[in-house]
Image (tube, rainbow, N blue to C red; front, side, top):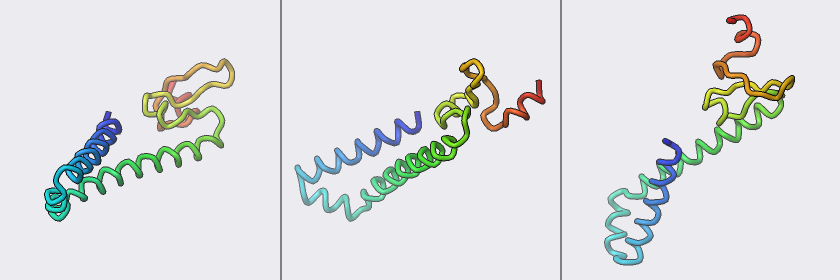
Length: 103
């Protein structure tokens, strides 16, 4: 939900800024001088950071067979069994060995 919210806010900010620039250029310049660009920069940086984090997660876990993607781990799914190709629910931060030893 936070990702969708930051994307929506970024899109809304860009649209409002573009509309303001089209309608009243003077207002756009006043808003820009007042720091409206800071919101655009903040939301853009948040989106870029999230995208980079997802790419790094994907690249780290592609080399480890059986480990779920970052989105699946965020939903509580950490490991996909190669034996019966079904999801094993466990703490995403545990290794398989640690999870088995807890049982």
